[in-house]
Image 1 (cartoon, helix red, strand yellow):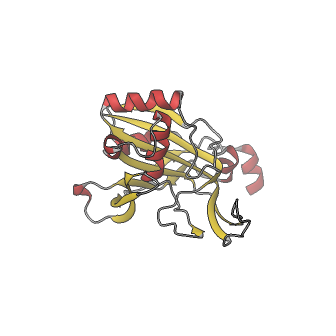
Image 2 (cartoon, rainbow, N blue to C red):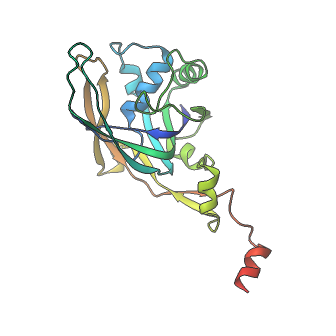
Image 3 (cartoon, helix red, strand yellow):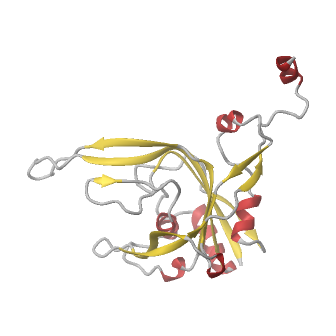
Length: 234
C-alpha cells in the first residue's frame, strides 16, 4: 500500500457537500467527492464513467491553513430569453491550504501520480472558478499509513501564515481521516461519490474520524535564543 499526497492551495476553494439550488455552501476542508473528481479528471475520465476503483481510495486531509470564509453573490441571464435567473449565493474559502492524501495499492497510486504530472483535464479546487496556485502533486509515501504520511509531511502553509506563528516551534494541525471500523463513533458527511453523471449524481454517507492533532515543526519559528526578542523583553 502507498499514499499519494496532494497540496490544495489557491486564492479560492469551494468544497460543497450539501449545496442546493441558489445557495452553494462549502465545507471547511476538502471533501472526498471533490478530490476523487480531481483525480478522475486528471485520468481523463468522463463524468459518466465508472468510479468504483477510485471510491476504494481511503481519504484523509490535514488543515495547514484554514483560510477565511467568503460569501459572493452572482447573477445570470438565460442565453435565449434574456430572463434573469435568481441571484445565487456562493461561499468560498479564501487563502486556505490543505494537504490531502489517498491510500491504495501501489499500482493505482502510481497511475494517479502519472496522471497528476500530465493531467488530461486541468485540476481545480472544488469549482472550475478555483484554480490551484501551486502544483497539486506533492509526493508518494510507500510503506506508510495514511495517518502517518499526513503527520510526517512538512507544514505547507504560506510563509506569511507561518510567520504569524513564529512564537510556536511546533503547530497543531487538524486531521480528518476516513473512518475505519476500529475508530468507533465518527462524524458523517455525504461525500462518498457513486456517480458523477450530470443526469443522475449520487453520493453516500462517509464516516469522518478526527484523531489527535498533528504536531508539525514551524520552519519560521524564532530561534530558541533570539537576541532581538531578548532585547524586547529586557
